[in-house]
Length: 234
Image (cartoon, rainbow, N blue to C red; front, top):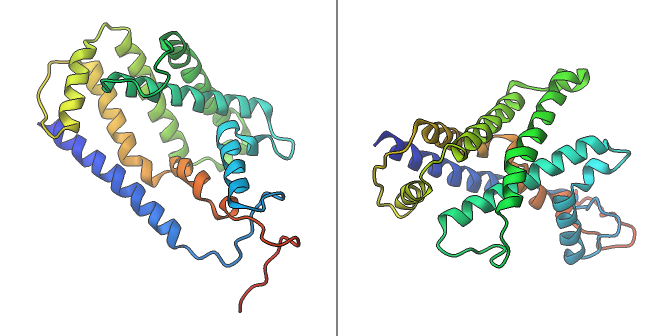
């Protein structure tokens, strides 16, 4: 019963927290809506640049960026995206992504190897790099360790021969507001609890950059004049 209550609390905080955050961002004043992309002269071109930045992490390569950092960050996010796809395919009756392609070998490679390796790299980078360690906060380490705990517990759970049918039955019962009790091993509850903690923490953390990258005024704005400037209205 406690797990069900905690689940609904976590989902409520996650959804309402994101909505509230987006609302506060939308209400923030933008005195001079000038975009950062020099050739962005329309909404379509601004969207193109945003998608390229989100998919390929171009900002990390600008101004002589660190290629190793870019590679580690990019691999981590791609692996995380594929992991989410794998979970979606598990809980849906019909696949909505890559329906004609068997992606289990790819998912296994990314989830069991690339995802934890890239995350460990990002964690060690904060510990070893003196300047980065100086500006890092406990929140930076907390989210990395939380993600690492989720990944490691997930890998252990996947290799323990867990009953995925029971897991699917349990999750779908909660999403349909008809929760049931199931008999699952302790490793599942560890993994599941860490995920719920992440959902609660998400709207109040730097993880919201996922949405910030899509709605940032400097990215969504575009230049309406050749001068690329706009006079302030005092």
